[in-house]
Image (cartoon, rainbow over all chains, first blue to last red; front, side):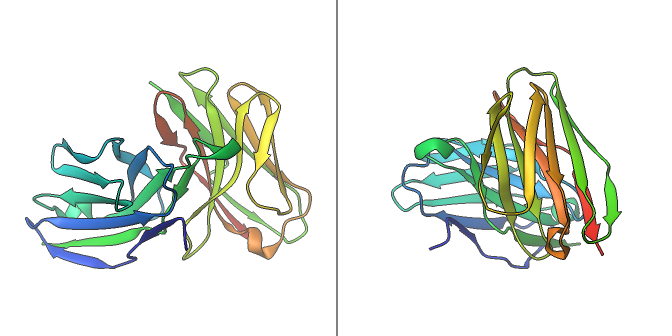
Length: 114
Length: 109
């Protein structure tokens, strides 16, 4: 089983809709979870972090975490064409000497159509 | 605020040539530093991480090496590049927050 899995997409949504991005992980000891946005040819930028079960909202973005199901998601409300990018889910390792290192999924490509 | 610098931004090198990529961090002290590689069509792969000066841990066996000669400097090296070393190399840091540098796009021909 891969450590962090994401649907590669592409996920296409119309402008103004809600985009839903999902991620599952295998390390039950993980306590910290991150969402990064990566525009083509650019480095990833951190948009959300979440550490506790439940929802965390920041502007148009909402991260959701369910540790029992080993599932984390990102909702983007009122999607804009500028949100078109690849979204990377990252999970912090919770074991051994590599504790604290981030393991990334391959990313979901989001396309927001005007 | 914290800033990461990486250079060069792009690099084209022949197979068998040496490599040196540099990363420096500003605005923080004693960060954890990381080298990631993103190959075409693949995810971000953690190559090395460092928790302090002279302390390097390798995640995957390969012909690359890393060094941390100063607290805020992290270097990725190779004695002889392979075609498979092509990719987008990213330096990252973590302490109170996390971030990536702008990256170096390496093409090995």
